[in-house]
Length: 337
Image 1 (cartoon, rainbow, N blue to C red):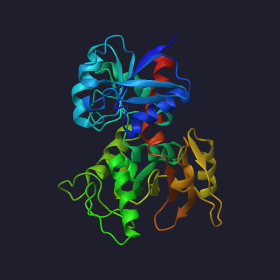
Image 2: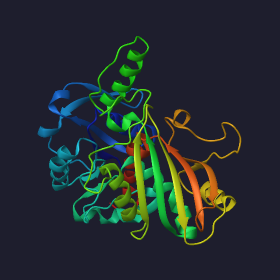
Image 3: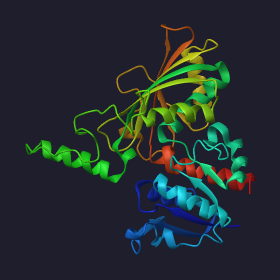
Image 4: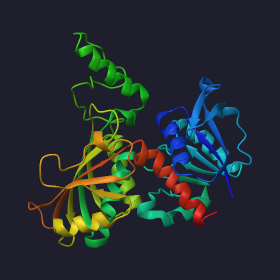
């Protein structure tokens, strides 16, 4: 049996990746519809190697008969159209931030809390977590199961693709301008991103944290364990694709690096690259286009009781967004619809 699938935001970075991954993983589709704003109507986008889809107007689209919606527009667009699709009978897997903390919407990373999918019936919507949260909780899950995580301190190194195509273009153009002695003013970011790092992602909140940092805190609690304490510092760096994270853990039970290595190597979705030699670790450049969450630099932190440190890298457009959404859809059709 095949499914009718609609991809909302099909012309964006994540939407295009969703279409590619659906094809790569042979998701059982009878029909795929590409949807975007009226500005993109009539454009074409690829589905697999040999199929081209014409983009339709989201605002005018009737979702009746659609089984699954993979949605990655802006949050405001999702607030309007995800409930409309659900009301028409579709199950919406939503990649925006709008629904993540709704108590009636499950927030799912299949390797971590697939059973939460059953909660979709409340609103007909399943939320995809933030990209930086996804890769972190995939790495934390086996450690938490074995030794109970008390506290997480994480610093992120997030690529420009997390802010969209315009952000990637800004990095490229500023880099080019540097070599011809021109100075391009930032438009997408608050400061120049080329040859720089910016400790500011999303808006600032009253306590001095940014909303990106807040997302990592509350989403980790919702997905993994509400008792875990999380402190995050999120930084935009001048790379195109791939987020990296330096994670420091305080555990309830002792766990040395050998045990942690074994647990992580056996965990679904995790690939351990941890040789204590030059180059014996994962970086965003070489993992771009890959599906796994890569863990390196596993070591004991002797400054706290039961401390452990990790370096975690993943492709934010794939596992951090599109792949996770498709994996939710795969779990959904296995036993929930």
